[in-house]
Length: 432
Image 1 (spheres, rainbow, N blue to C red):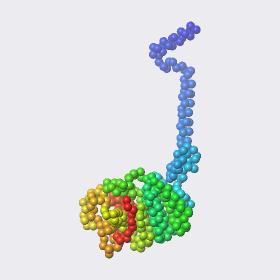
Image 2: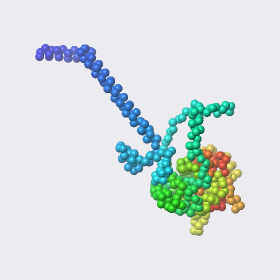
Image 3: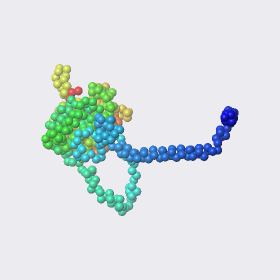
Image 4: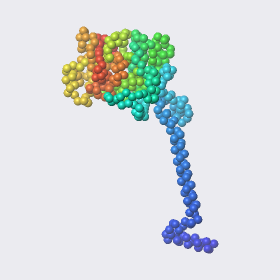
């Protein structure tokens, strides 16, 4: 025991005097330490390999899921961690919605980002130079030409006299009853008429009422009252503006830009093979039952009636005045005023603080029943579908100092299309 104590004392003394660490390690322990280090490295490599394999295994299913457009139900939050997710979530493929699915009561949610992979140009594609010689068809070219008959269903000519009625809508529940009552009086074949709505930022029963209306018209109503299509879309812009403030001048540019975005979402999604597109406000009070046939008879690219509003004057009597002052014709005075504006200046009608010198539909003589216009509104606007298909939408940016419907008219005229109005063909808007 005394020898053992002497040995321990010797080692402690050497350690306290700063003996190097390499002297403490004995030669017999070196192989064991090397083996332990090698085993540790091997385990780390295996662990990293297994993690990479696991990520690779799940990556395809995740990429497929993110390319789908999902409409979550109320309980889908609780189903995310179980297989019930696929039961609680309705996957809607915008590129292949079947005819059967089109009759079901779902609302397609727009606005999902989709980034297609860039495709390289085929190596066999001949150059487009003026002196390009004729080339013989390769096997790839022949295969494409042989399948051209399958493309006809996507590039067919518009269905003659077919009509697509489009209405962007927000918190409009109290006016929907009148909206459909006016549609029911419309003298136009139902089998040639389709409906499409875009609901945005609504907090009332608008969406639910549209779903119920679709179910009644397409399933319960007599066949002669059923529409060719009845589609409902939802796209929220998270733009809150009280109804009483919607006509304030300082709110007009941002409000009209949001309306332009809504209209563009709607027509780009809903338009198929229809020949005519009719934009109708959700809160009109009256229009003649034969108005669609009457407007089509003029055979114009874009045409609008004169939208009035009925208000009481100071004596308590009803008086009609122009409601839609977005329908106007430029004058020499207005063009001179525009020439002095900056590119960033926004013009809006109907405000005493901003005089634009334009000619509204109530300023034409009786003998001018159809007049060319430079701006239109969206209360009741009939458009030939080829105008939209050629790329004329509703500018959400300033185009010649205008946005939305007035910008649409300016853009249509810049493309060479005719824009017209009927000063003495009246419809009526509800009183705000």
